[in-house]
Image 1 (cartoon, rainbow, N blue to C red):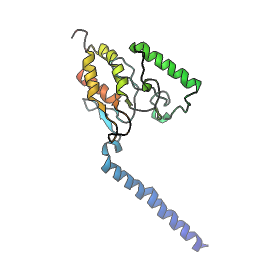
Image 2 (tube, helix red, strand yellow):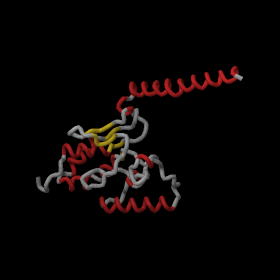
Image 3 (cartoon, rainbow, N blue to C red):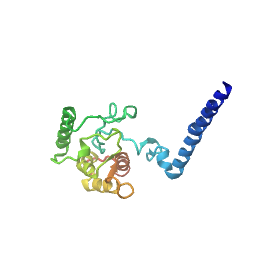
Image 4 (cartoon, rainbow, N blue to C red):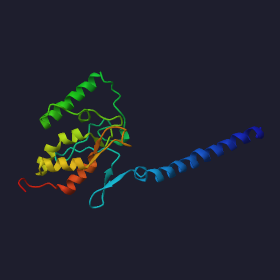
Length: 195
């Protein structure tokens, strides 16, 4: 019986060491070498050095002087513990109703008839930190008015933060909401009208 148990015990110990220790350390090491910023959470700090979030995880901004993110299906909104898609199909009446409500809200806030898709749809994880340049520009007038700045200043700042497709061809151009909002705070502090 011992001769039959020994291979099982040795296999368990060897596989535990390989898959529970060596493999995770190797993956962590490769990640630290290849993408150290992302491997460490892409943490973002404000001008005072305080941690304000991650460039990889969306946050809910609702004040008028900030860019607003796309809707979130994660928990009660940008709750990483509740990260998931809604799993509602494109013909689901609940999804259609939610998107119509979101679109009406964006139209009312911007006065524009055309609304980018990311303004009314949640991402697969519900935590997407980016929006399209079109959606960011749609919000420029509101942000400028709330900050007492010109729309051109806000548009220029958004343009400075447009990131191209990954590897030059994967995905679409995007704007990181947290990074732009920090830049707005740094460069266009809320002013009194007329200053």
